[in-house]
Picture (cartoon, rainbow, N blue to C red):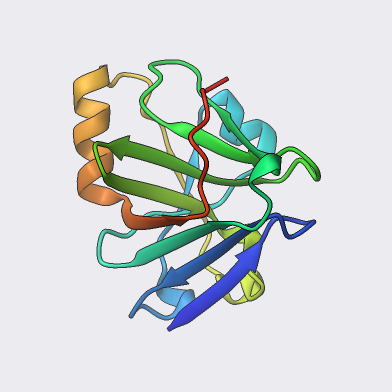
Length: 146
């Protein structure tokens, strides 16, 4: 199944390819202050694949905080939090904000609260590589985090 979406203005597009139907997707609700302030529902599935396309790369904003193990991807124009990415060499993993998908209403499972505050940097990266979606970036600029 292929699910498509984008930020509000369309500058950043999202595609989620998964064999799991939307009502069986496990959704997470990270308890960090960033995710709580965005009320984000995230999909994390190592068997799925995400494609993030920068239609207008000028609008891509990366934001990193805490252990700085990942970048939160936000649209500069419309302010939508789209995804979180982890890059290691030429490999990328991500979770996406399910509410950016066109068919978001089909993802009906209640998000599971998750608290990763006790993790150190190494264990956080290891967990993310094991549990996040392999990701392809299209039209992605090289940007400094910030």
